[in-house]
Image 1 (cartoon, rainbow, N blue to C red):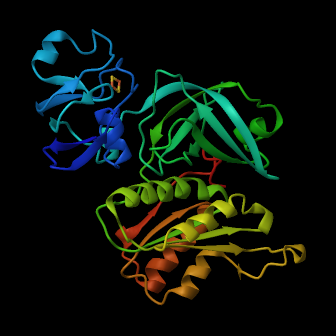
Image 2 (spheres, helix red, strand yellow):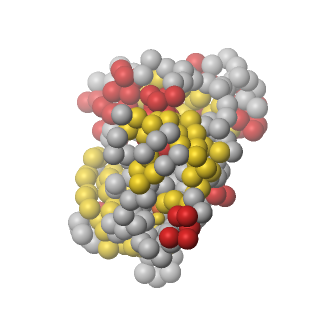
Length: 346
Ligand code: FES
């Protein structure tokens, strides 16, 4: 059995399946209602039931009082619909709506996916959840007061673990720590979510993603979010990913990117090697990744471009796409991290 839920004032509509809370159903269908803990303790998801009935679910009595229930308030992370509903709440539509938080986390899993790339999966305390938009990053807080920025590589709907792609390079303080002494179960602290490198969902222009190295991480988050939303609401926005690395071994999640291409007609994947080895026996594209885009498109006037990776690549892409291919300046989106604080993009 499913119940139809209408959000006021946006008039967005979604369906909750049996046993799903209002929040679970909204997130599954790609609507960002505000939340924090997702277990009835923080009150972030509190909103009003304008019409219909809910089972209020298990929650903290101080977080939602009897008086509030009488007034029609509910915690959407706990409330189970018992009828069709009209609810009132403010949807997260922009970064300013999301609270930046400092949280501890535990290193749950470490996977060395290339000689110089480690994927680390972080678990935050069970009574906490991190709300973020696809493409945002977190700052790992170091003991010396410094921080290092890493993009979240998982999509917001898939947030059991937070995934970071860490590339090792000389002088990368956190990266060297990751590769030399970090172990599973270590505790870290971070602040986030941060950043404005997010998908602009109000446009239907085709998208070109350009990533170099571990700049793939936020693009992965954005693409997995876009595929998830498209599955539910339908969307045929064309998307292509150019992923540039030096050698074949550095395409550390190439099978995943290849599987997206097989599963989604509106997506294509073009890996580009800049220093292919003879042993790579590479038949694909070669050269600088942004130059592959220039070769393939005479005009970018009708596109959006999302670029993430080494600052030199991002800058070259910005300049050449705008000056040589007519990309509107306000349709170029990128991370603007500096080398000293961002290790994931280098
Ligand atoms: S998200 Fe914390 S109470 Fe619902």
